[in-house]
Image 1 (spheres, rainbow over the protein chains, first blue to last red):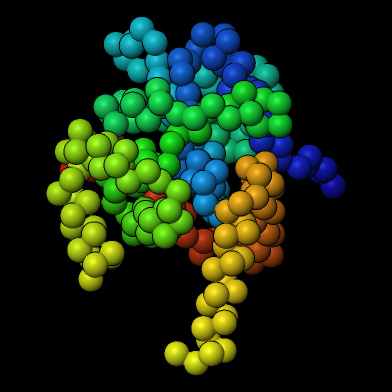
Image 2: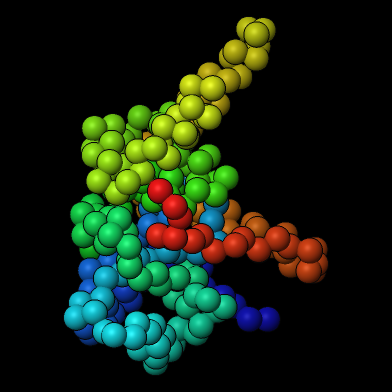
Length: 177
Length: 63
């Protein structure tokens, strides 16, 4: 019987910091469901989305150096993720202007002694709106009901990223039906 | 709405508020428990009929 140690997010995050120290990634931030969990109630999810900036912007973006670095430290690829201390980690280049801004302005969080960064609620909401799946809208509703977001900051982000019309449609459909 | 139903809704809302107020590491532990439970269900079913989530098209949506 194979004994699998329990997942330990702080060890996972420490490995992401090691990638940063090694210069393989630039600034990073937790996004997706695990970032939403920071602000809302726990959300069931399969993996940990890590959005990364690449300093120096290589002409052809590749995640191979990240995978090689982690493999050398005992973390095996698992589908389109890498299993790092029990968490399937998906590295997502923050390529769009909105994602870049979300990473740059992420909140610094001390996770059990490990410095980490979590996207802010307003950016998570804008990204959910832009992504636009059913579960993204459901999460947006939860954000609205929770009252954790600063609405003026949210509307500023929506306006700057051309999402105001989409927000109005969302409001009409789900907030003021 | 009956008083019982109203009370149930209020109780659910209060529970959600309690969960939201937990420290982040505690919430992460709850997510880890949910993942472990989902894994057990998958293994018990030994089924290929598990829906895998389509990766989100981050940054690709139209405004």
